[in-house]
View 1 (cartoon, rainbow, N blue to C red):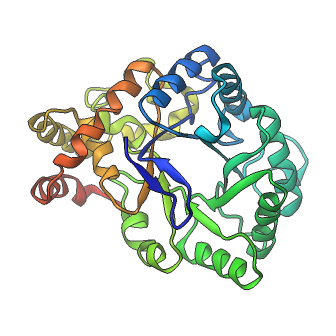
View 2: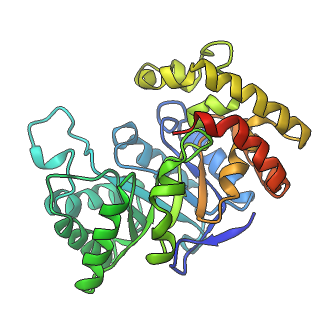
Length: 326
């Protein structure tokens, strides 16, 4: 396992990391989470991603219980969470959902700390942009959370380049803690934001990336080429919005062609897809998801494929996947 700086910060994160979206609480209980976290840690992974909204807070509870059971030295691992949607989705409290206002953020961090049983969280993200709250209010709140010692670094997830730059410039102007990282979706069929929109930010403000969905929610495993397997992410009722993408015929045909390249390199298509994201020098860490230990162990095989992605191999991959990419 190699380690990379998170943007221009001094923090080093493993090139592959483990996230909990969809899986924790829904598919993975505390016992299984503990087993997978231990396996990831033994493989050199030191970054574990979460969010307040995942399983309505229960993902943080599961991860917190697993950390407690594992009893690792706190300096040895990095953990994140994200704020925006809130937990009171059906309630009338308008300041508890779909917002990045100061009141919500200053209380949301306390809820996450309690659920995860931690004294501080290493990375906190604004999970989506909030067009109703002035960016300066959000920047000041996130900076104050860090100033209080409840978090160490802050960043954004799925923000536009313009909004990220605006947040950074506000922090620079007022001597506040600046956003360090962005968490965008990035995979073979979803490239524009990482490769084009953010291009100037890597050099201009030192933006780091902790990318999610390297397997396009499972499409790039090849499992959806003949339908939707029982027990898969696509079969979950709550994930119905993913079905159109997972069963896309042209993309599944492309996955079959990519699998042939992966076989030539001594791996499988999932490992190839993860390695493809990992080879991007602007990516600080690639967040993996797994509902079973075997999936995690298989995905770690991407490390062996990454150095095999020569310019010639990358050109072959692009010829197949890039025409279908957004």
